[in-house]
Image (cartoon, rainbow, N blue to C red):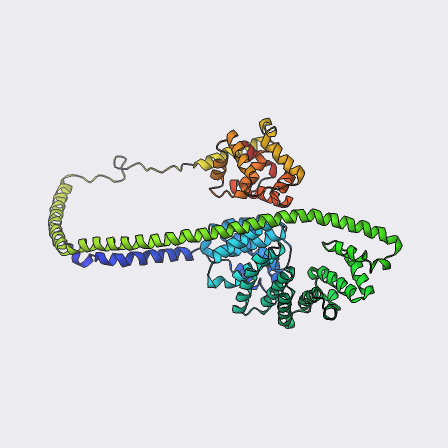
Length: 591
């Protein structure tokens, strides 16, 4: 049988266009696979923004163990989101860290920016402001100019502006809040506009720019006219406070009347502070005394203001004689507590400002590098296309002659095949055909034996050692306990000092540990599949040095709960399961 190649041959020039189209279809097919979710989760995702409590109830009715790995992580993300929308304070970052890790390697789902945003929300509730700020910035980098994520971008920039305001980085906060206002206008979010105008006014009020603050507070009050009465009260309190700072006592007095009793629990303390100050300035001493007394009896950061007002010359005459010394003692105690907290807040602000500045510099440097790479790739691509076209042109120029030669070759091949066929038939008549199932003709079946990776072997060995020592704790070697590096750290803990990420002492700690265990960091990288974060390494180094958890929290400037969460998260990365803290400490000391 002759083969007619002119019927099946493909024009080589068509390959230039066919191959990219095929590759694009393959990528789209891969990108769309695995993005579908359980119908129950999709339904919850549709109601979580407007009915957070209902979403929580429905999530509680689903057994996460019955879900696939893909759906379980989506379930966890929705759980964090629903509780955040319901204004439930977050108490741990272990769940959101696992969600972020999963979506960082499954970015085709499009949920990684949202996971980063809620990583920032969780860490803000935990008081870890530098980490919260980093997550918000990473989320903005991921969103970039994606119009489909415009609403999420609005949430992120608003939260970033609010956090920078809380850290007293007012100049840095303003651009974020203004960007949030722009997005609110594009999405016709009246409620968002009201809150962001109020936030921008608060920033200008903190910068002692009362005239600008007054404009934005009035806009927020005007936009809130159709909102809940508690929300309206909160906006009016800020306007009244700014009028008080502008010495417009009559205006402030008319605004503040009755507001503290309407405000929700989050705004009430702030409302009482300015109600007491405004009534005192207006000479309404009985109301000022009532609010100041209520403030002194609350357990909040404004308690000292209540005592301060009660001990002022105007109100001290109204204090019962047997209570005056109790108020003095209370004022002193609240001031000492405030000063202690203020030192930690100052350290957080310095660390956050450094992280913010570093992120801006890195982003500008990365943009410049990407621009150079883009130009280089464009030039290289143009040259490659030109060479590719030239090569195909040279090959196609001789295509007709090649086709004739192939046709001739087909004729020779067909004739040879016919002769071989006749010869085979003749031989088969004389010689019996061997049984293909006989032992002689059967080929042995070779099955490849899986070879365990180095990481698997190392994990298995560590598991055996951890199982062998059970609950006993491996002691820290004497050479570490007596080291100069550890002594320096313990001295910092006693002084209440924390370490910045760029502190020279971190390099000294790494050098000391590597002098004892040269493969320490490399082994951690192997065990975590190359996903060892800087925060994980810091925890591991401090564990190796035998620093207690309370000391770790002081050095890293985080809460004890965050220390425990990070140790458990490191254990999850190494073994894929959570173990108790003694086990993970032993693993680190075995490396």
